[in-house]
Length: 465
Image (cartoon, rainbow, N blue to C red; front, side):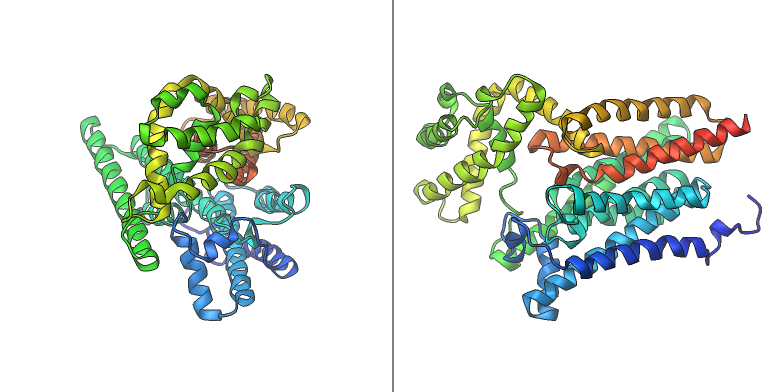
């Protein structure tokens, strides 16, 4: 590139401004049109329940202290979430527009993908609302994820320390918002490794040492800050130093889903009756795996439909009713539940590996469907086509790209990192909970954006042949 700045790299690029104004107008319109969307989990964030990660309840508490009335501060939260959604959409779009040297129509198409995803949630999905309007962690986390992908990919390409630092800051914010965002830490680690392998001219041994050093520092800093914030938050709000509780209930739900009554022999004597009380309710209602249909489509529906019955309607209620019988008076009741669920998990999971693996694999396939579409029979067929198409385009781009072609390399990096992010998110979700759209929506925009990037790049390379 010459020293003279192109339109795409000018500080004042009118088209880049347009790529910000369109998402801004879109999300603010729906912020005022739909207002606040109250969801089933919203109350637990407002009351700052100790099972919740600290950032979102703190965010709401801060707005509550500023604006006072619930109606006003929740609307302020929606406005901020909408602004963040617009900024994340614009940042990602402008980055790809400049990095891949896209023309304006293709850039507008890419900008429309996050917007179209929001419209699907608003008008097509059963929830009937956008996450930017919802009092849920997704109101922040989806935007944080899109911004993270932008900065972590740019770090691979350019290697600027500012991008690495911003990626780490967003990762910490994401983890403090919801535990699912640990995927950002894994992606950041991959970004660090990729950058060094692609760009570093150090000898192999020094390169390896440099990678290891950066990985260790990234892990220590991220885990130290998130753990410290979690403990301090709970000390201020709940009176004792501890991380947020009830993370293990998701594994316990899967353990009960795949359990058999005879597994009571593995349970510590003190909790055998409790296990049988929970299991027998689930068994009598046919909520467990042995009642699941044989085919994949219906078996995943059986798991998803009964997940909350096992966890919230049975395990949580029964354990809460008995928690005072266990002693542990120095712990809060949710901490006591954590202790007992850990006992269940340690006793049950080693004997359920085969069954759990089947559930996780089925969940993984469902997660892919919900990432690129929605779990309906016709859309499962669509998924079976579009995901192989993505892989074929990616392999073709690897083979086709010209040597030292920076634009093709950038398109390839964006597409590879997007695929890694999608697969990582679906895997993590599949291992601990059922992959409903709320947990897989993070991958939808980046999947289709990367698909467009690859198609555009392959078309360009074909024209230059």
